[in-house]
Image (cartoon, rainbow, N blue to C red; front, top):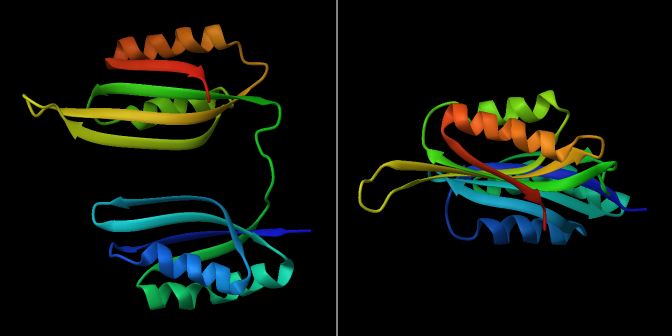
Length: 175
């Protein structure tokens, strides 16, 4: 039965980082099942779910720190469970757009947490309007909404937050 590990890595961005870490995982006999990678402020960050037979996962766990050092990354590796999560939930996508101001992520995440809604993925981005240069904020999230939550009520409550914070929020079934 396959086992799983999660690796998180961060360090100065440079070409070849994905190659270095993916080669390390492959050389250990592991498989990358899921990953998120991004450059933020000049730092490269990775979050990787690795699967494999017990000896392969053990090699990944014991060698991750050294592989990270060789690539110039700080790596944290830990065992985790694989497989499906989000049972008894319905996947929804939440998109938010607004003029940037502090507290948007916290307000939305507090609202979701209070209702037992899990955030499966969350991406935010700050861009600038073409003519005015005004900072524009966008948030895109994938949510696990418990099947007992009334979606119409959820949408109305999100509309209220939108009105209070001047945020355009849209909740729709996830693809």
